[in-house]
Length: 422
Image: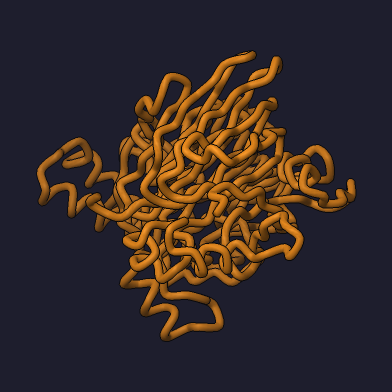
């Protein structure tokens, strides 16, 4: 049987998505027959088996990808099939972001199971949701807590934040940073994290009236002084996107602000705070939809769960970025420290070829630019598969492939899952 299948994937329309043809999500979905409306936000393209937007094979029967995988063990390998109960281990996405997503974190497996059991109306499954984002275009995000001395500096520069936290919390934090902020001893780091937790907790539990009043005061001051540094400009922009006093606007003074160029990536482990701000990215995650939100959102904010779940790791923006390794002549492998997925980015110039060795698990690839053809090398009976911008393919396990670019070059991203410790 065939081991390569072209997929039709569904889009998700959320308020923060780019509108119409401007959205890469819309452009890619169009390649498989989606009709695009220029007033609709096309936020996400989902490639996978998640029941909220399941992909289907582009055959006569429109076979759901989930059924294809469930009914053919060899497409996954028995080991992957058994570990993930006959399903795809990951969900692959394209995101096109017009305005900031909520500041959020995803639970680990233990917390995910507890939240699902206790609050099934808010948490729909018991899984964890580590995720990785790879920039397709210049991409901005908030990710993890800043180094403590940067936060201390922000308390002085943005005294409205200091006022919001109250003098007890602010003074304790500033004294701690002065005493042990740079220390690497386990005891000091643990204490630093406890004090940082107090700061974040005080911020998140501030009364809405106080947040609205102090944020308005801060924005007025920044506008009057024509503040032009990146952080001040970000504060003003987030307040415009979520007006009326959203506590998330203050959060960007505590979290790292990261700007990524195409090819750069960040990994977001469980219980780490983050928010995507703008741009287009390829995203891969464990198959879960669990989100604990904290700000930049009109949706349900689970403040107590959030404050208690975070790791409070702190460090530089650069330390959040991943270092890829070579995977063939024209490809880079992004391999996060979790079992469910890795992603390969392949970038070919005009009329070049890339051979990828067999992967011992299922994979999904999307063409993000250019064109060419794909051949499943071991399958002598197979014809070539056309590669065009927006085309998505499922590739069964242990299938060596060769990609050949046309005269405009070719780029594609390929997510795969293999068995842990293999």
